[in-house]
Length: 252
Ligand SMILES: [Zn+2]
Image (tube, rainbow, N blue to C red; front, side):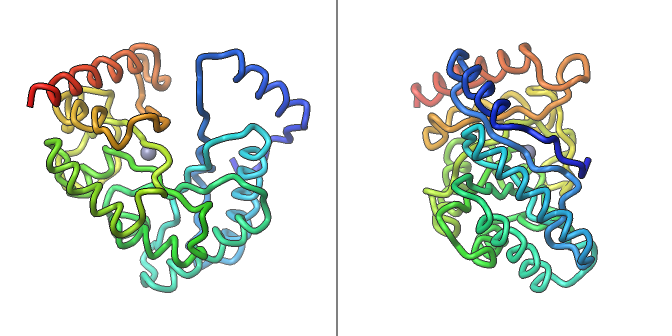
């Protein structure tokens, strides 16, 4: 929904207190999915900016690692002006807030959503001013669907070296861990429960055990066993696949 929740300073304090007493070390906000900073329609961009500003305000209030954002969708419009429009909205949102980063997520590779590869992510970051508060969130399901080979530790390392060369290693702030309902390179965004999709246990072992992701917040965005979102079972599966992946790397 566009309508923001009116959090108070007391809410933020209560959140921080609860965090301090919990085993959760990091929180990441996902921006509202209705946001389209690249839209040609002024009204959509205005709403997107307001929503993004609100997410950053909450992010500053609760001390989040960042606000993950799908940079925008072209919806048939030409690429360059779309990137320019998205960059302007993102820059303005950052200017209006204190310290919370915006993390641009790589997308699944269709021609609509911006950010399907590292060139596009780099251009978006440039268009948004290139500041330090611009980061990335790498989603393994989207990489796979966009046709990036991440099936072996070596292949994934090459992909991430491209990220580091074009976007900058220091910009990577968090990862999204999802399996894919669609095959490699299918260019569609359909998450599957961990180990039940086309990326599969093998692919997730590789992704979850990559040393460059060590200590980064990892978020699961799957339906879970009951369709109500990622649950304890999914978290356990992720931890197990990570352990198995680390073991396999150790044997090399
Ligand atoms: Zn994601």
